[in-house]
Length: 363
Image (cartoon, one colour):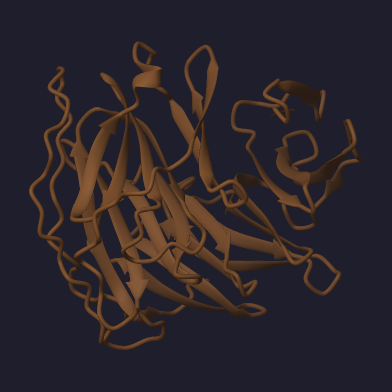
């Protein structure tokens, strides 16, 4: 496991752990007081380890209790509290569960949110902590083929809902927030002959939209401004197609596709990681290719047109039927690159039917 950073436009490389781990080893990272903290699964101890980088070296490794058998890991620091979510296979069965570890009281505790697969491993999970310090979770249920959302109310107490009620495939999923604490779940539906980027977001009830469809997506990730609104332009999708790299950007009138000419000629990525930098109001993207890694940062350029699809009244939180149905966008799609294969996208037609029936936590 290694760590790299570029404080002065020079890339520095540090070793975290010298042990050789198998390909399934995963890690997650966050910052507190400008200090990077990292969590990673250690195959040899069979547990999630955490440490921090101070000065020019990493501190000692600490194992999180109850973290054995971790598959996919998500980690955030909020107000001094560690929040760690991971998928876990029950030994000797085909059952996979979503688990959560935190140390809010000063003692590490592990909670099981629910079963997320009955037919084997499930890596399609995510976790984010809202501005109030409340942990939210999103996952694709391998059994029902539906996208789910959970919010933690108290210890071992979760509200679980279907975020996207139609059965779908899922080869990528990410949870963000808009307007502070409204969940905004993006996922790549690979059910059928093509890949469809879909979004499920909650404004009182759950709504869905489909910004982009293409059969040649090799990797995707998103960067969403902290505090973005339902009509904000500051959320971006960065995608790798077999014929190039693109961003999908929400603008006045709808979603548009733009080529990343900086990466012209590069091989398609196998993985992309993007993150919003609230200090500099920009986002950074790491592209993982077969034989190299590329980093790119971008500063959004403000648009001059005035958005015409502002919801009225202002979106509010809470259960029940929304009183602020977002206005469907009315726009003509702009032309997109004509290289072969041609990326195409389907303009959205507005929110769908609310599907926020609470579900019980399955054990």
